[in-house]
Image (tube, rainbow, N blue to C red; front, side):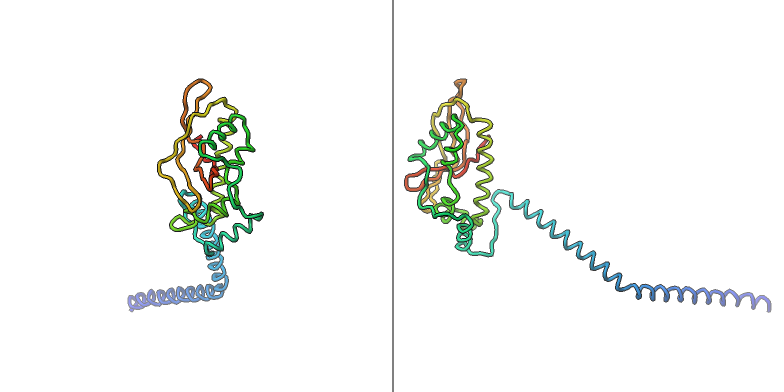
Length: 239
């Protein structure tokens, strides 16, 4: 009889232990339920942080993409509206012709070398296409204005300006003031016709340096011509 009673006592203890565990679980659930609003707030905060991080990452990647050559920019405006807004932002009178250029490609390049020798930044700037000339005379029929290379005029102009300013700075630091003599220039055989503008690309200039050696290099970007006036589209170069 004593053996039977000793076997029943552990079963009663196990039952009490189970009841205690169940009670703890119920209490924990009740506490979690009471903290539910705080949990929801935490989840919402995490979601907001995630959205912010994603937005920053997208903005950073977009900035990187825009800096890549050939990047195409989508716009919510039609091309006509883009150019209207760009012209309005520039202000001033409409350009009807290239001003400050030269009567031939050779004359323009010869003048360019002469301006470099004299460190004449005023004339160098005069030989380059101005903003209103770009907006009114070049952009509308350029590759920038049409698929698959379409870019809004303000963005396209900013790219050209950035490369041009950097190129001119390098020219002034490395070449300006050098006593070199112009020999000639050659551009790619394929001439591009963009509306009333003719564009010459891949131009190389040959000069005789002070030591007597001949150097051939790319000193500028494309040359554009309209109605007998030649100008530089930019001063992007190989220096």
